Image 1 (tube, rainbow, N blue to C red):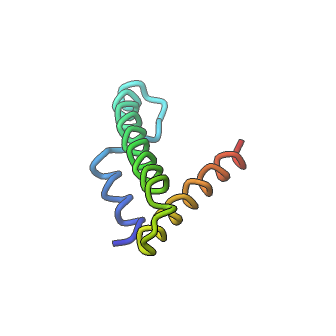
Image 2: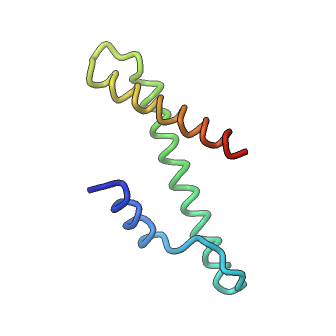
Length: 84
């Protein structure tokens, strides 16, 4: 399953998050956004835990995943900085 397909499933389960400037609709979308942010936070925390726990592992496969996780966090941090 691709990342895009997983994202589609998550969006269908979570509901739309883009505001439309209609208070009744945006009230629901605010709840959806808060839930989406909570999920994103959990995902970041999981990636961070894996990076910190496994980046220096003596086991090649675990170390590889730890390094991939660490690089992903670095890329996200840089992307956010570039946007601001």
